[in-house]
Image 1 (cartoon, rainbow, N blue to C red):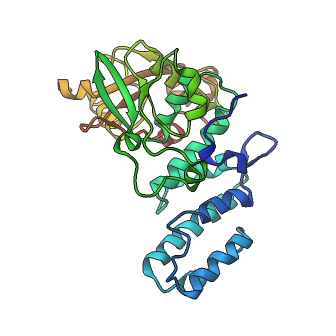
Image 2: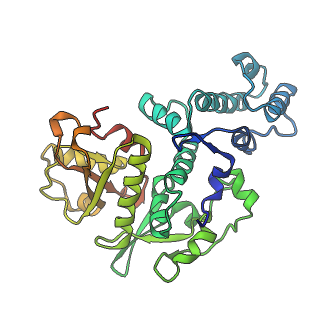
Length: 330
């Protein structure tokens, strides 16, 4: 199978008997290679000593007193966050279990960047055998902000960071290791150029057509099926819809903050202005293949999923809503 998404670090991970990703020392060292974690030349002895000790043994216990010895306040905060995140990973058998627990208990001080990287690598596992670049490109919505543009009558989503030229520091040290070009050109994914996705999957430089009735939303639905099945062990079928009005929202999940607001308004019977309706990017109907896995009060009823863009035309998906918001009995 053609490989993809090297930058998520999946090649540093092992799998357990259930297929979940198991943390390794090499994977933990990737976080120690982050620019904000590597001690600067003027760092104090305590910080340099801690970093060196963890490079030698990434699972080494770190006490709060070890971090308090670091002179720089910002460095102490970075280390508290990193060690807290590391310890959370090590408390769980798999990355998948660690993610579910974090989403259900609350992310606390975990940076959004870490959460997105979490989603990135877990999706890499869930989509390991996928051969359709359209599905893989649609999966990027789960962990990277998209800017939506209307072009020639089509709704096109492109990677916001790629369009903006990226930041001063790459999202992952692996990006630097891979030597990815910082100014890759954007082109819309289609059947003619789909084969090039494999070699450029870490550049995030292919846009996706999210127009109703086209490949993009159907591919996105397939990603949701894989995500729910992989994390919750529940087989579902997702069907893209073209009409939001009059949908019986007995149970719905907003896939982002804007979609949740729109869904709440519809559920309460409020009238939505035309501007709000135009911000709806996708509506989906989710059905459990085994209705007995659903909560009794909605068993057999369709579940609706709403995806929307912000007033700034950005899609900031929250895939954790699928983990915490579906009416799964267990």
